[in-house]
Length: 220
Ligand code: PRP
Ligand code: URA
Image (cartoon, rainbow, N blue to C red; front, side, top):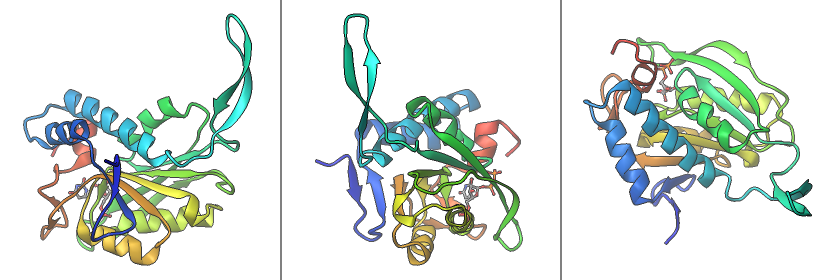
């Protein structure tokens, strides 16, 4: 049994097939889950997604000294991966990925969905040079795909190669997966679940509500 199963309908999506991940996601979704627990559950899912999305990174070695010996020890490739958070809610994942990849370089893209048009409006682009790096784009919710499409355009404009970009998202809607797969067929999307549909406000159903508001504890 594979930890990351390709999705039957969306070939660019990889769904984490693990009972612990599924249970933590159910707790995250629950309306009654308070902010502190919501943050803890996000941290677990961030690390699970981070490990799954980096399974194919080519390992290298570096020389280290243990208390008893020296050895050529496994290490992540150079240049180090880049972690890109789509603000705000992407921080809910990226904050915890840094624990897995302490040398990673960090970037941020600030986007807000316009409530009328539902299109992503950009308010910040703070990206390093991404050429030659594996890039992990973090946003817990993939709804219409507008925010992710805009982010991927910016990431490519900063030197990333599509085949080196991996998206980490907790819940994806079929509509968003289809849109991103059409525009970026080489980009693989790691997710904990593919939900049923979008509602009339472009919220994912059953979903978990507003990820940013629930993570940051702002009114919802
Ligand atoms: C949410 C979410 C994604 C976006 C997904 O952000 O974190 O970025 O919506 O929707 P889309 O696929 O239809 O673009 P939101 O605009 O609520 O901002 P926030 O993260 O600052 O709360
Ligand atoms: N953004 C969210 O936080 N939740 C959704 O369901 C859709 C977009």
